[in-house]
Image (cartoon, rainbow, N blue to C red; front, top):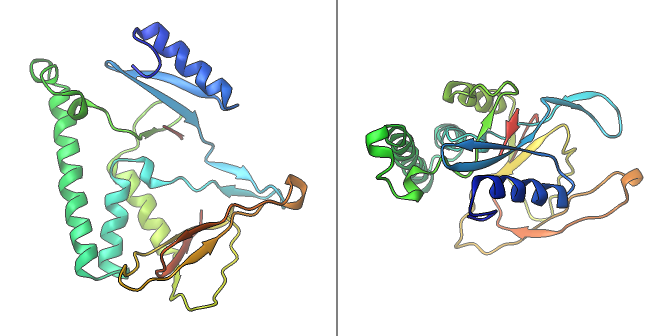
Length: 215
């Protein structure tokens, strides 16, 4: 409906929308659902050194990736009641998503489900040949990240300068009852033009990990 009332019009609308942003998308259909995929190379050269690096596939593009990281967080890094509730909530919602996808594949039942239950999800990723990235694959990627993870407690006045091509980065949840502010900026190499985009957020433990097609 967003791109057009018919399949042909929707595909054309999605393609023109992608061209307007200068990005190349692949249009695919999952039943009656139009999905846009963008190619993401597994490795790519560093813009300054030229060395080939893992591009940092984000497991959150996979339906099991977010739950996997939440389980690692509650087991090793954030053993709090809040994180336990987050992990339990994600477990229930992920199980419900899988159950609805199974029902949607049943010819006699799938057509009876409302759109928000029969949806294939807002994100997805597959291998270049179109084969699925399994839940076990997503879990092993998350496990690899956590095996090579560095973490530290943030302190007032602490600055962390990270090479975003060599390291992935995130932070653990912070206590909302302790007001604080963190400024982050995304820098670019001088050859690309210096600019930054400051953002604010809460404070927590900082974590970093070494950095397919996805929608």
